Length: 130
Image 1 (spheres, rainbow, N blue to C red):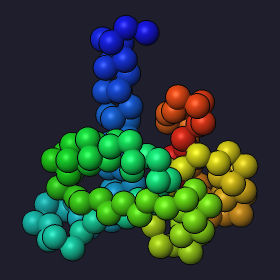
Image 2 (cartoon, rainbow, N blue to C red; image 1 turned 90 degrees about the horizontal axis):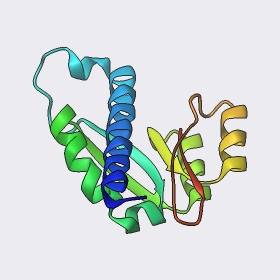
Image 3 (cartoon, helix red, strand yellow; image 1 turned 180 degrees about the horizontal axis):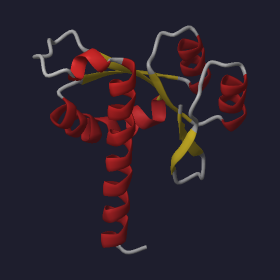
């Protein structure tokens, strides 16, 4: 893959994730988008594996999301199992994790409703959006 193709792929992934986070915000907090000024206390909490945090991905994508939506994202970067547990208790609004079996169980148990594969790392672990 050429550097240009790689850059285009990264841009596509970023746009897709910004769209997903924005869609979640509109569905979960419709009052935020009624034309009134938003306060600093409006934010989304994202549970994630530590490797996504460590990669610098969030440092790149979150300012783009913030500029596009006016919303802040608080990232709780923990192990994938811990992130799934946080989400099942309702402590995070969305997940970005990589445990297919755990993700499938999360949805089957009724804790998640919309699992999507969004990216792979160099080790070919699939990262899913829930």
